[in-house]
Each structure stands twice: as structure tokens, then as C-alpha cells.
Image 1 (cartoon, rainbow, N blue to C red):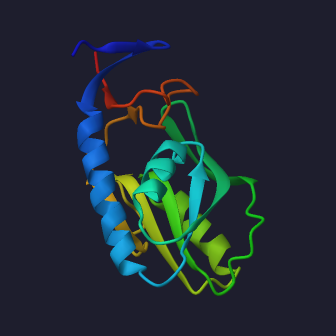
Image 2: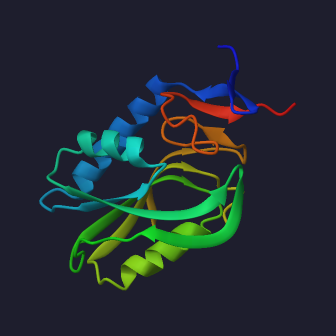
Length: 180
């Protein structure tokens, strides 16, 4: 496939939609097995994880609920290093099995902050389900990432919910930034 232009940057396909969907189905089956007889609460991190969360929840055979929380730490292609809770969780998660659904775990600092915020609400358990993980960039190594679809290199990516300055989320494939 030809590279695409998003805003002022060129991107090439690095992961086709068919590969993403197959892996989401596998992870959904694993969650169904692990949470059989329970009703987990999926908490999707907005905005990047909304497409992944929708596909994941539909692939899980056990009854579940979904809620949303918004945190931000990116501007453009760089992490700001600051974590901001923009839209808070209104659902009561005390005594619940919580699965945080994230698009990408990069340094892990944002996720560490989010886990800390959720732990204060006394859930029964917290697990992380991330579409993508950048293992070489992780600074926090004790995160409860129980489910991960793909480990990727430190490239900047977009598509399947991930964006570049708000653009490209609708793309069904995942694209990598082409370095000139």
C-alpha cells in the first residue's frame, strides 16, 4: 500500500485490520475464560481506545459493563509527561473486577497514575488490556498488563483509534510514521 498523508506527516501501514481483528478476538476469548461467572467492568481510556474497546467488548462472551475515563498526556507526537484527568469515572467500582482498556502503553506513567486513581475506589481487582505496548520505552515495569495484543517498537503510530493531532482515528489499519 502507498503511504498516506495525515496533516503534515506521511504514514505507512504497519499492521493490517485483519491482523488486529484476529488478535482482538483471541484476547476477548481469554478474558471470557478468565472472568467466567463474573461481570467485569471495562473502563475504556478515551479517546484512543474507543474503537478497540468496542471490538473487544463484543468479542467477550461473559456479561460485562463498560465505562469511560479520559486522561491526556500527549500533544502532537510527544508525551508531555503530565497526566491530566479530563473526564472522571462516575460508576461505582468498589468490589468490582476492573479491566482498563487502553490503546497504547508507552512509558507506563499515564497508566500508573490511572491505576492509582482507580485503586482509591476499592475495586476487587484491576487488570490492564492494551492494544499496543512499547516494551523498550516502558519506565514502569510493575503494571498489571494482563492482556496485550501487540508489542511494538518506539515508532509513532496512528489508526484504529490512535491519532495524530486528532486525525487518523477512523483508519482500520495501524500506520507507522515514515521518517524522511
